[in-house]
Amino acid sequence: MNEESQNFVNYSNRIIVRGFLCVVLLAGLLLILPLYMQNRMTRLYAKSHELSEKEEMLHREILLQELEINKLSSLESLSGFAEEAGLGLNQVPTKVRVVGGSK
Image (cartoon, rainbow, N blue to C red; front, side, top):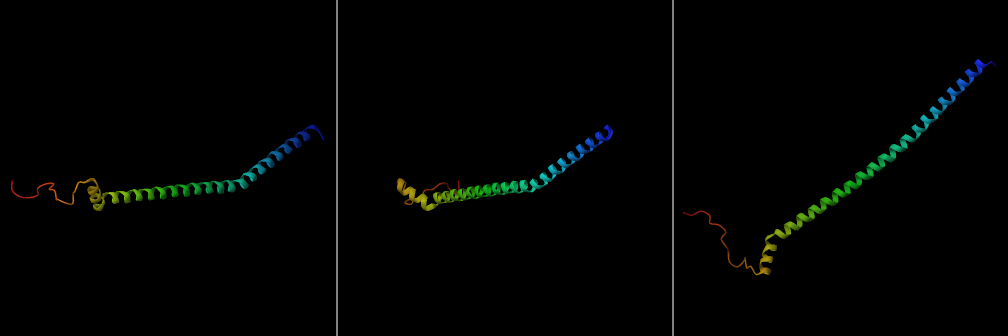
């Protein structure tokens, strides 16, 4: 073989090796990509579920606080507190403001 044909063979061998490495790399990426996407989706669904649970917990907490507010502001609770404190609000009605009538 002369030197020119030897250089051509070396050059073509390098092209073949580079092409083969590119194909192997591309095939590896194509095989790994679905696994990566599946893992990413699983993490996103887990985070979504965690946030949903947190939202439900906060909603339950709000409802419990509203229930407590309603319980504390109910008339029975207020009258019970008035009796315990000795205010006697149920004994004598108290005028808060005058409605109607002449001046």
